[in-house]
Length: 176
Image (tube, rainbow, N blue to C red; front, side, top):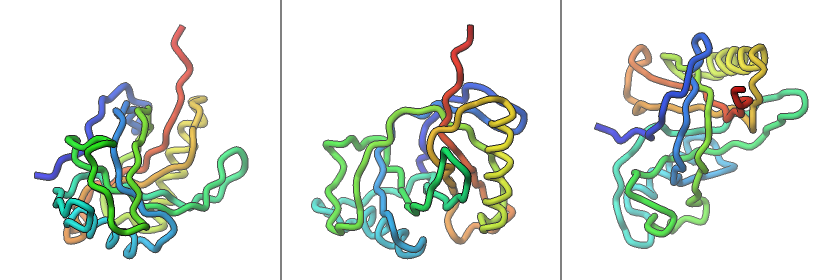
C-alpha cells in the first residue's frame, strides 16, 4: 500500500472537493520534460541521496500545468514533485545528490480538487482545469497560484483504474 498525502475534507461545491492539507515535504524537479523529471525523482527515492536511503513511493505525484490565462494568473513553469513519506521533515529529508532535485516544504493550505479517471492526457487535463476554474469563479472563490495535476497510480495501472485530480490553492472568504 502506498502512503497518500493526508488531508481533511472541508466542504464541497458540486463535484469539487475542498481540502485542507498540512505542510508537506516534497522533492521537486523543475524545467525538465516529464520523463526526465520523473527519472531524477525516482533515482532520489531509490537511494541517490547523501545517506543512500531508499524511500517508499508516495501519492500523489504532483505536476504543475502550463495554463495560458489572462491576468492575474500566468504560469509557464513546469515542475514535478514527489511527496516524501510523512516521517520526513526539513531536517531529516535526505540530501539529494543530483543538483536538479530540490527538497522543499509546501506550507499548509486549502485546495479545491476535481477528480477524474483515465489517462491524464493534455486534452483531459485542459478540460478538467477549465471546469475547476470556471466553477470556482462562479462561486466567487479566490484562486491562489496555478492549477496542478495530482496522479495517484503507477504508469502500469490501466486507464479505467487511474485516479487523477486537478487541484488549485484557494482562499475562501471567512463566514460571517
